[in-house]
Length: 250
Image 1 (cartoon, helix red, strand yellow):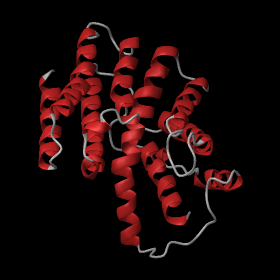
Image 2 (cartoon, rainbow, N blue to C red):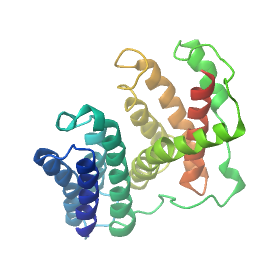
Image 3 (cartoon, rainbow, N blue to C red):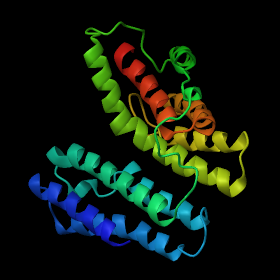
C-alpha cells in the first residue's frame, strides 16, 4: 500500500530534478502530500467506505493543488510542468486509494456502456455566460480543422475534464450520495463545491463570482449525467465539450 506513494513521489522528484527544480523542502512536501492521505486510508482500512476519513483523504488530495501549496519552492520556469505532474500524481494516488484499497463503489471508472451517456448543456451555459458578461461575443474559430478540434478536445478531456470529474463526481458526489443518500440535494451540493473551486480562476477579478455561477450550473448538469450514465467518461466528455466550445468560440 505504501509502495505507491513512494514510487509516485520518486517520479515527481525525478521530473523536478530534470527541470533543475529539486530541493529538500520540495521533497519533504511531496512526501507529505503522498503519504499523509495513504496513512489516513490505512487508518480507515477496517471501516467500509465512505466514512469521514474518506472525505479527509479527498481534501488532502485536492486542497494542496487547489491552493498551489509549495509553489514558492519551485522556480517559475518549472511551475507549469510540475503543476501538471502534481495533477498526475494526485489522480494516480486517488485511484490507487479508492479503487484498490478502499474499494469505493460507484466511481464508474470504465468506458461508456449505454447510449444514454450522451447529453448537451452548452447552449444553456453559453446563453447565461453572455447574459452575465462572463463570455465575450461569439466568434468562429480561425482554423476550424477537424484535426485541430479533435486534438484540443482530447487534450481538454485528458488534462482538465477527466481529472475534475474523477474528483468532483467520482469521489465527492459519489461519497456524499453513499453517505447521505441520493436525491436532488446531492448533485446540488457537489455542484456548489465544484462552483466554489472556480472562484480563484480567471479570467476576471478574483473571487470570480461569474465563473462560480456558470461552473455551479455546469456541475449540476455533469452531476446528473454522472448519476444516469454508466461511465465517468460521460460527464467528462460533456465537460470537455463545454470547455472546448468556450475555448474555440468565445
